[in-house]
Length: 302
Ligand SMILES: [Zn+2]
Ligand SMILES: [Zn+2]
Image 1 (cartoon, rainbow, N blue to C red):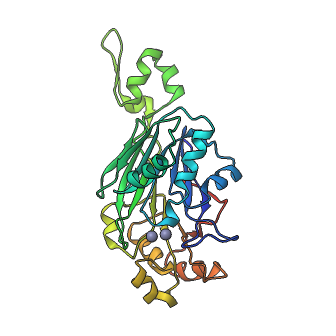
Image 2 (image 1 turned 90 degrees about the horizontal axis):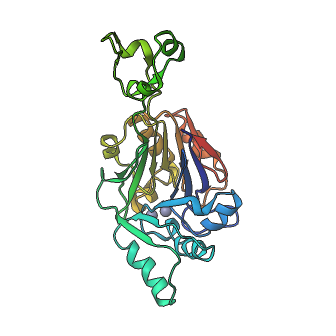
Image 3 (image 1 turned 180 degrees about the horizontal axis):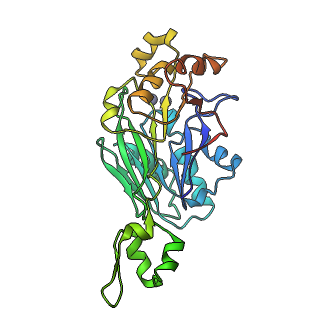
């Protein structure tokens, strides 16, 4: 299954000509998930040629404007483009009220149904299908705020084509074999599963953590993710400012990546005060080498 993260914006606070606000597209197989929706996200979706009507689930971390001020505009555009499919919107308490009041007061009736799902506790399974599971993560911010972990489910065992031929395994039996069953022929002869299959690839996981102060509790919810996005609004030189505003430094993000045994770390939500983003890497890589900047337009394979 394809599994990638497209960064459409990673600025904090106000949007500028050089930085768009937080928004990402997470592609898992045939599904496109929109993660946060800062101002201008619909323009970013167009710019990066994302098929807007293929998005059926939107996840909002919290109700600070830099993470959702683009939502009403995007919903309005989906309506103007004639969307019919229902749209699921996941986020904290209050989001439904904010969105609905805007459309109600404009006298708009959307062409599609919006289904709101409240995220209210860490560990909550917010989405699940036969291949994917999404759970809420705890973050430590000024207002209720959730991260989300996107995870592949355990995959079926891989069939060994040569062995299938050798033991003349009929097609109808193959599905059960991928689920781990032995093969039994009409005369009661048994071919053990391990002769016919090999281990599947390990399920992959991506964790999105913005906005938050350094929060060691994350270790209880994420272990060994393939890719971790963690905010790094500040550098250690502004550690006090980070603490006051419940944000993290590049060193905090690297510390979390180490603690949760992430394979790779990407950081974003940079404060506009820093002209060069390289300093984030210089700082974080002292502790965690496999670290990159979540800059607009970059695609990270999970
Ligand atoms: Zn923010
Ligand atoms: Zn915030």
